[in-house]
Length: 113
Image 1: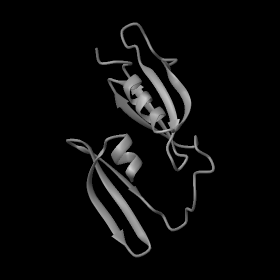
Image 2: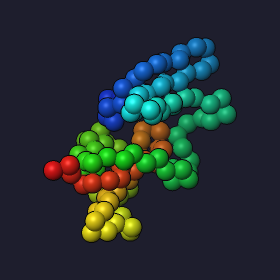
Image 3: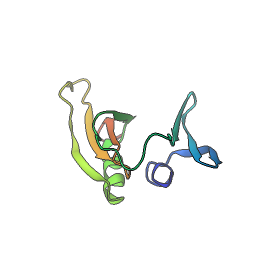
């Protein structure tokens, strides 16, 4: 929870904390929320980190790359143009693993400036 709140700066909206279960609801945008919770059948860090890749779209890929690098996340891909980038849509990507070995990507503009 601290990683999502403190590093990714997601706003914690609700916390479920009952015996043998927990979960966190984060507010992302007006009509979008992210629920992260425990599942009784899953233990430890992800054994196949890139099986599912979560994408976060932003106008500041480089800023967020620096943020997760500073938090000592494992970086799989520094900011670079995606294979589908065009002159009119210069889409960048940066890939990292969170503390539980889940794979995330920032995608979008390199900088908002």
